[in-house]
Length: 147
Image (cartoon, rainbow, N blue to C red; front, side, top):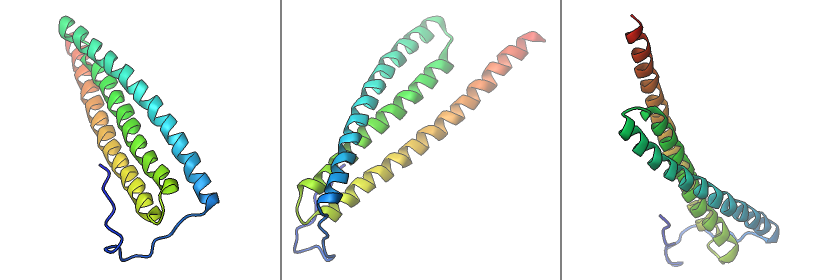
């Protein structure tokens, strides 16, 4: 996902180097993002195991697919946040560690975050659609057998 910066002779914009105060802010942000990324990936992996167990259970009993889809969606959300936050945090850390490439690393971090929220938007919309389908199927089953 991470792109290499263009060689210095190709860059046309003046590069800004952030100062010590800004670097402390970027360091704290990168540290927090790293912690959140690790925790979200752990939760995502736990959900992944649970999703696998729910799939096995649903196939065996031929029911329970709605909860499997819900946990699967939660898995995707957690892993998306975890991995994308990890990469964005790495770019924020590189702002502090690099010289004369701060703006490039800042833009790379922001692009990673933009990508993450675009993917999350897609996952959440799909989860909403699947939830509505599950509710309709449940209602049809409930009210279809009552009559």
